[in-house]
Image 1 (cartoon, rainbow, N blue to C red):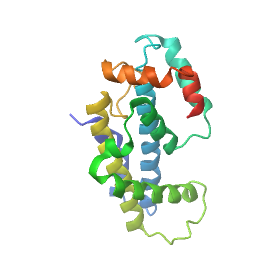
Image 2: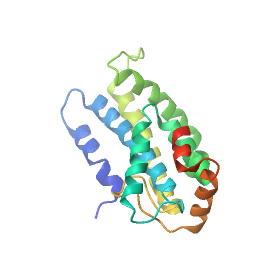
Image 3: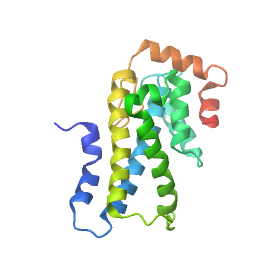
Image 4: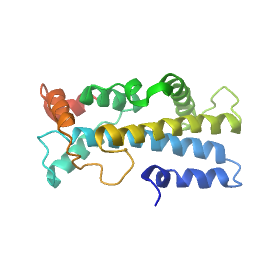
Length: 191
């Protein structure tokens, strides 16, 4: 059986194996979308560990989803900061030895993303190899985050049903402490 991350990137793999002229740009864009989605889902899952959320409370789940939806200027760095605030663990802690290399690559990819997704020139004359390399770095980040997310928090950021309890007492305590000053709504508003 394939892992959640393998399933998540099946479409990217199909694009890269295709003969499509735009496959490098398409794979890059889709990988970036999956990267941001993983961070959002992982942040939401970690936040959902708070004792204020009951395991099967559909209303609370919808309220959390609505609060995240209302954040229309949120980007990957906001979620990374949210994970740090909720867990006390930085991305450097989580990603490990490759953090510096991958962070530099993610920052570069973010610049490409901003131009490409807005239909603008990047000004760097990117060729397909550069775009494929960039998407590979972002994918490596996702893979490491998925592995470490599972080990540390009980969730990889890709599996279905992100708003579920992982039953990790230390994580619950950390999340409760992080949201205590403003409540979960205030925490999301400040992301």
